[in-house]
Image (cartoon, rainbow, N blue to C red; front, top):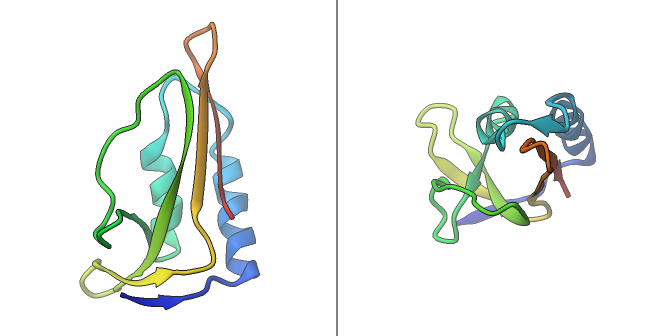
Length: 105
């Protein structure tokens, strides 16, 4: 897979949008987080380079997602983002709501 960097300007834009999703949720808002990436023609990818599919579990944890630029025509991951990952952490509070932190490094 070809690699390409993401500019600081695009990172700032994505992180601003991720921040606007908010911190406290009744569930981990993966759809909202991934939609922010998609608006910037980026998708999270698995180790094999395909678009990430799965679920998150646990009361508190974190994970890092590799990302790729997508083709506007086919919506397939094409070019891996080599200088950034999507960082996501969550903590389930006693109120059963999740505290979420998501950002692009």
